[in-house]
Length: 276
Length: 292
Ligand SMILES: Nc1ncnc2c1ncn2[C@@H]1O[C@H](COP(=O)(O)OP(=O)(O)OP(=O)(O)O)[C@@H](O)[C@H]1O
Ligand SMILES: [Mg+2]
Image (cartoon, rainbow over all chains, first blue to last red; front, side):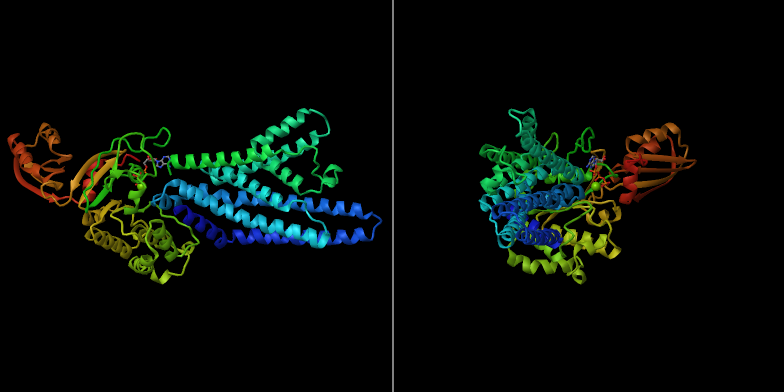
């Protein structure tokens, strides 16, 4: 019961403080730019000598880049909007009036978490839906398995969210934000390094990539999402930046789920144990 | 408690149901920390505490506890009515009850003119009033108020006093932290003084015999040894020629003091006990400001 009230209040807070609306406005801006870009590209390709088969691949690659931007935006937005909720309320003392109510502390933390999970779901669904619709109606291309893709990106946001919550039970708002964004940066770099490593067999670079994916699996989840959505041809011909040279396996997705559950478990445990 | 720092050392307290209990001590004495431990916000490294018959921090028992934190802060985007509804729901009060209780409470704490403002536009005193209402919304049996009058104007302070009394008359127990001793004096039934996390002394403010008094004495032939010997009964004794001012924490000791003075050869012309205010008692018990 308490958890649902906390989830509701978290959602309402985002709406009242205009966080949700500004995030959606920024998203609308992105979709506008993306749509215009697609429109021009389609027009220019029509007037060029590029064969239709290649045109399709170029537009598909553009769609993947658009979706990748949505993915990065969604993960960063999730972190930025949620980083203050635990740490900030502990610092300001707001938590005192909440944590003395007749509910266990896990309900506070999980309730807030659920509120942000719901927001991430709305954000990812709208942004992904928008970008995929633009790809289809303007560019005439369709992602392969859009549902798998959108679910994986949502999973990635929930990973970032849980890690943010975990650090928020220890550190101040700013510190938690810096650490989480730093980890996302490591994952980002690691993902690209691992792709680069695909050009050589048994590369040591791949190890670096894999280790960074283990430290923070967010980017690995994205690369799986990209693999799911890309046309097989475009992946193997390396038209898109997300080649299928090294595709994170299903085990990596399982790892990401376990990872987020552990982060959330540590967050709950530490939030219950600590003095407020 | 906090790393190496010990905030509350050795505190033994008992509060009777239905009384207003004053918890006094200098800044940093450990008052707020003690309340936090009783509410389960902080965990003591040792010892035990029972609140309304359950171990401190018990989740179910919190349904019967109201709490106004020191420096009350809350979501700034709420209006006072939304704040009270939220707290009421978290305490499990049915919405039908809240519908009638919330406007009444807002009126009680004098926030009706600001009912549609958000808390971000509230002054410190207004926020404090909202916090007080929040502590009462579920009609708790036990209410912890950590400096409830901080930031309040004189009318607001009187309002708090009236509210506290009304809560006791309803049968609630009130645990009050405050530095405004004149208020404590007229509201509390019992007070405890703590310093550095330990109880220094306690007072039943209804018991005449236990009342602290200051005595103005005029006497001749007061020897320095005689004055030193007063330490047995007195918290302080200052002599200036024939004038002697002493304080004792209990009126019941007066006959012994007088007997001692006469017995040690002093010629006593005047012996006038005066009731000490709580503030005088605080200063005599805590001694000089030791810079906490
Ligand atoms: N968050 C904290 N971190 C470290 N030390 C703290 C913290 N809060 C309080 N303390 C320390 O604990 C001791 C007791 O503090 P507490 O807040 O309980 O005092 P208090 O009696 O309520 O004082 P005041 O009258 O100023 O409100 C102080 O010495 C203080 O320095
Ligand atoms: Mg205090």
